[in-house]
Image 1 (cartoon, rainbow, N blue to C red):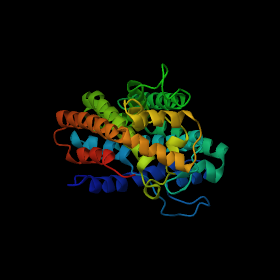
Image 2: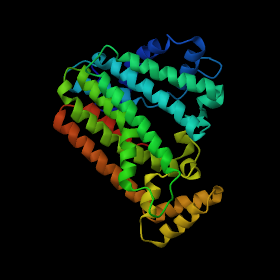
Image 3: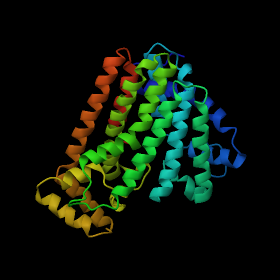
Image 4: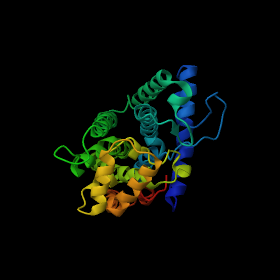
Length: 336
């Protein structure tokens, strides 16, 4: 299947058309209860198992895998095991992240744990992860990249959680370097694995390492934009509650950048955050202070820098990857 299309959106749609039947086949081997929960998590059904048109996510990671394979002269079908694997890992990570963060909503409806309970949701997440690993069990040129990404994802998520227990300011404050390392693992690891498995399965395993690095840079840009949407995004579009990250005292990049500025708004923000829990009015004021102190502009600037680095690597190694380039660009210039 040729996924070439002049716009990233068209390529994404075509990637999804190829991905979904393979994804459904992978999930079909689960226990019926587990398959039902997986279907809910993937947007195929409601909590009662009725087929529905839930938000199925952007499916950008499988698209990166499929388009990377085509960019090296392979077929999209050749990279399908990698595409299914990274989408299953992504679904697993979201299921567990919502439990960790106590997020009750995901994509405009209840999170899996809220709909089914924590125990069942944990089992469903574990099942998705096990299926993902099995997808690449017969592909020795690709499985090391997925395996490494899983370690990076867990390490990044652990660092992100540990940041919440550190002070906003002072000797033990979270640095920008620590943040970018966290984002490169938590978000970039799986994007890197998508690109690396794509080119490896597409017939160019020698490009897997540089494409993995491209995906890691892309992941940092993606995470910074995600942080921005967590503060200034429209919950009607993002499907998540407004100010959720601020409410949980997450050390997101816009806030870290704002606190580092030597301006009155930064000092007021520091005092507000250090005071502890905030009501809706205080959260709104904190978001305004982050922007006033330059956190929003700094986040946009750093996201653009990492995005430029990722695209330079695409251009260097995959000069005929117009669709892949467009999909990468859509990750950073998005509203949800």
